[in-house]
Image 1: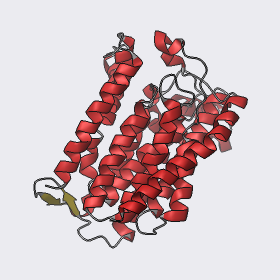
Image 2: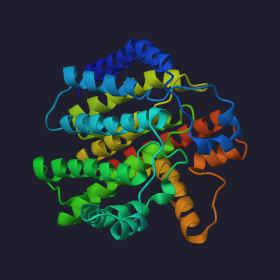
Image 3: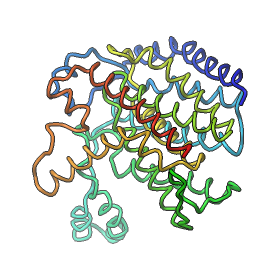
Image 4: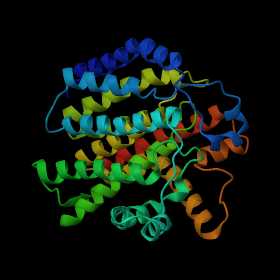
Length: 366
């Protein structure tokens, strides 16, 4: 491993991010690219915050893209993480744009289809019949809707997350000449030969990680700190595997996130928004899959999945039992609601994240 190159990549990515930050941040403030989600207005600390632009994730996405293209382009290892990052970022920026500038929308239900079948003309009747499966699928995620009703709906996001997850699976399982691609690595010398079951496992891992990481964005500096720890862990694993392009890619991401964090610590000048959080989750999962260590996402990224489960349980508790488990979810907002200072939550989460990272790197060597 050429550590001089590793340091150069890290410093270049960080410097690039700092260099473009005045232009990006100035643009976001000029056009008032801010909107706080209505559900956060029950938290006193959130209501005291000044308007803060979203879409700050553009900073580190641009830095990682150009640094990788110029200094670390590798068709086998960095082609897919960059592609996934750009696809997920495009989804996120669409979501952010609709939240801020879009018009309120509603989700058509299966009942709407049946009403249309009864009352509309023949052509529209056929359309309503064809849309019944899609509208039934949309109803499964109705509890995840935000109160604004402007951005992408949960079922729309989830469909795109699945497309991204399938792309990662296809590249890993069918395109890469990867020895033991049917074998699920486990620590302490264990492994499971699961054959074609690796296909749904990879899809599920990328899918859940993308959602979990996106849900963790909500406090100044929280997601950036946790993402730095996670990419740091997988970067160390890449070094031990001599997977040089992936180690350099993780260093690129960490450098860009360090610069982004400079503007995101409390009080934040920018928030990464969906464009950044969705890109981070999908890219992190892709790196873990390419290193054949997807199982370690559930160790190194445990805090992401705790946030995810708190939201999941909250939504379905309301849907099934008509009662909330927490005053608000994800759980980092619960701690804020009960009186923890925002900085205390972020620092404690970062300490736990780095501990989990070191445990994950240790497990990888076993």
